Image 1: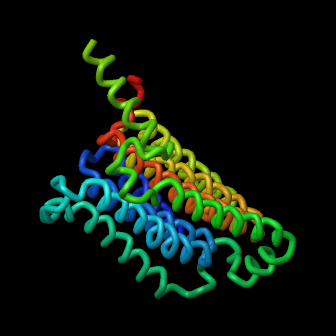
Image 2 (image 1 turned 180 degrees about the vertical axis):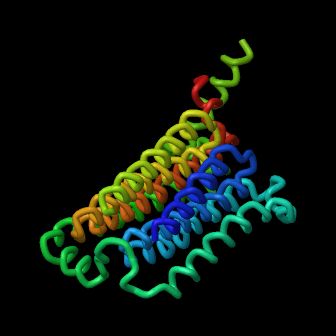
Length: 187
Length: 100
């Protein structure tokens, strides 16, 4: 399993470097998904299959979907609506092919050849709802607060955007600040 | 054998964190900055899992779950702020805001 760990680590590092260096936003997010997959393989080789599955489901699934939706909302009129050129798929496809080959090889291995001791979902769950149950409650409160906060920040109605003198605080402060910034930069 | 793997795992976590931190400092796009924060949080979670695997305890994975919930909450609010930022300033570059 040492070889699997090192290959996955190399893929993670390479794709993360591409996340930082790519200019195009969608390409960077594509490489970020590859990086999260590689870290999931690293988790699997470390004997943490439950966390590896959660990494794929929550990070590469839910959080990346949030990012993609935000990109769609933010520059829907920019060039991001153009189809991604075929050359841009090549790098992530290559890295993911390496990861898929690695995963298939790992699945064909005998279970006992995993390195170290495997800490399965049962132990994690027993610990999560045993001594850490207060943390689970706090995490649920944090998620609820994030939900309400995101609704409050981003879910302003359109009428405020239309009428600037509407009296609400968010857009009313944003506009004059923007104009003042522009004037200061011109002067 | 387990000691060597935990050493390399922590090294990988440090490298990923360093890349994310470099991107946080270098890139000016707000979405990429949020993605770099995600990379750094993921590296921190990786360090937790490596430490938990080193001792064969589930505590590291439990802490990774908490990091996961925290990252989800953070990115939700961060992307909402990015949308408001774009609506009021018509830009996603953080440097445009820094001039004010």
